[in-house]
Image (cartoon, rainbow over all chains, first blue to last red; front, top):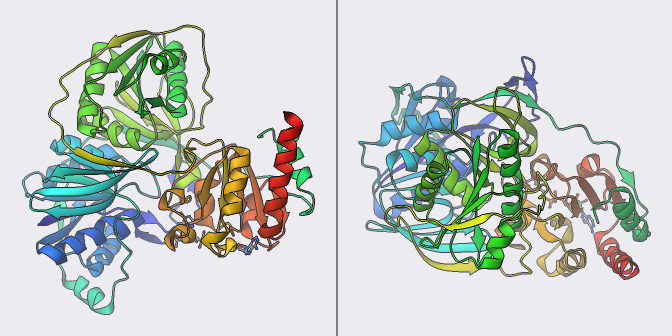
Length: 246
Length: 322
Ligand SMILES: Cc1cc2nc3c(=O)[nH]c(=O)nc-3n(C[C@H](O)[C@H](O)[C@H](O)COP(=O)(O)OP(=O)(O)OC[C@H]3O[C@@H](n4cnc5c(N)ncnc54)[C@H](O)[C@@H]3O)c2cc1C
């Protein structure tokens, strides 16, 4: 089974967010970048488990500049077999999805898996767009995945519960919590990753359809009002009369 | 500019998010001299359809041939509906169905997509929408550069507005193609059915509660308030609570009117998912807990004493209101 896993770069979760250039650009100064957790913990690890159980190959793909390579090496250290970097600055989800689709269209992948969203733009867009462009079935927010021959059985999150469903491969999936457990790369993996193939391919020049014109930070909170722990009537009173939320 | 609103339903019931999306879509249409059409599918009785009709919508298209959430079929249906009513803007709720179907529709129509919108688009020459980014740590104003536009609206971002006018309901069918997924079984979450992303009040607890056996008081407080329950990530990771209750940067982002957090330290990744809440109450034994900096009301105390007292206070408040 050949699996393509889409890997995005994201700021570490402890990053204090700020902007530059008149609030038009994310301030990358001193920011530590990681593999987007949903791509790493769930999409990549489940792909590796399936490959280990059934043989095949796991390829990772990113749309990004050379600054993407450290996080791609991390994904190789966790166990991916090879990596492809499509050389373009990612600016919107449609462009990223179109570039990945263009790369993947004649490679015969059985599964294309991405995380359910990135923790920076939280778009939940790329996987669904790939499915649309490649005209493949799509299962979003999948929390489990088994593959038997050309049939995949999945569970997905839905309003009010989870749903069990099946679809045939080739198939596009967005992965959510529950699909696998995070894997910490070991020394052997890190050494091996240095020599695994990381191919750079030119972009096809896909269109962008949206642009971010500015960013804002949420207004600062005022001081917390402390309530006597013995006096919860006072808290209820404030929530009703002052905050007007109950 | 005509607007199409996609409304999901569950077991014949329409969610609050669909009424918010209708209110939102109707206002965008009205502001731009157009009308709003609503598309829905599955088993919906007349009562549910009539309710959908009262949020500023002009036409309701109801497709009864599709009943499962098959994203490919629903995307084709949506594109056909948008085409039949000449809609340039398509609105989904930012829920599981919307997140699944909207990107497909957008890519098929080559329409710019903004997910998780939290406000109405700007009314000038440019179509700019404000959305949550960095899991709620910031907002981005995103401009859509295409004539056709697709948006998903984050629940609890606009308040639904019921109106007198009632829409005309039409049966709608289109070639949605073959089924791309086969749904075998739905497993309901159980509980009292208050959906966490839509809930106006949320009671949440963390590792400070020491064990799953102590969640009774959290559930009781939630029940008294009519709130949904949530938890911090470690609590769901160790299996004290189900995954779908995990809020934060790697869980779900919520923006209720009231978020009560007991025994949660307020790590940056937790705050990311909840700091869009209008009012935050923090109950923690440690006065230095970082959560107090993000709170409106703070109680420095032991949750095992404070929460039962709060339950009693809410009961007396409700009795006095009745
Ligand atoms: C990549 C990454 C992503 C993450 N994503 C998330 C996320 O999405 N959501 C999330 O929640 N976390 C996330 N985390 C984890 C986060 O950093 C914190 O570890 C976590 O939120 C802490 O959970 P907690 O507050 O329940 O537990 P703790 O940090 O252990 O805090 C327990 C709190 O309870 C208080 N307490 C103890 N006893 C009592 C009592 N009797 N009464 C009242 N208070 C009491 C303590 O003073 C303490 O403040 C993430 C971490 C990483 C590295």
